[in-house]
Length: 268
Image (cartoon, rainbow, N blue to C red; front, top):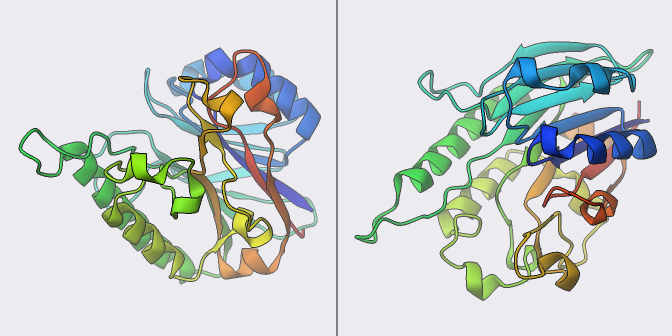
């Protein structure tokens, strides 16, 4: 079995003790990290390497940043999402991981733009929201290209999308939010309709199961959350899917990220 997780750590420097504890306890084989918020050289690769992980990083000072941790060899394929050479935000990294004696899996760590606020003062769509929509269109195009290969792949990360109203605690309060706007959801559906499988929802169909709880207004204690972190599987990877879930343990730790890991297990 290969256990793959995605986790927005909201600063690897601030979250390192929590991350180290979780890695030791949960023992994932591959972890897709978002919002590491550091340049490549500042990533704590030695500390994490001591736990048996290889590391690949696409970092950026202060903001964004993604990384892949793997107990298996990593062969980095991309450190940016294709489609816009002028986009210098560190939001995507893709690599091949090769389990010993197992099948190669292509993994992509995604930190999709938030997109808020969605409107300017004149009511028109904001640049931030338009950037999100264009980024999603690039992701759709890249996924179409990946599907033409023979690789099993997992595209995991903070998608900043609640796919349906049952994926958040207060749909009425988010109607004009970039996480829930019709255009955002339509592009997410378009991505799924390419033939991808949501690993978590394949085994967990109940409403109001969350991966994110704001630091404000007692959201964690009240379970006022959002499901915005997803693991999307190619058909070949979906055929190997054996289990999935959300590990809420890290969100309850001291100095926790506002996100918690989402995971799946694939047959080796």
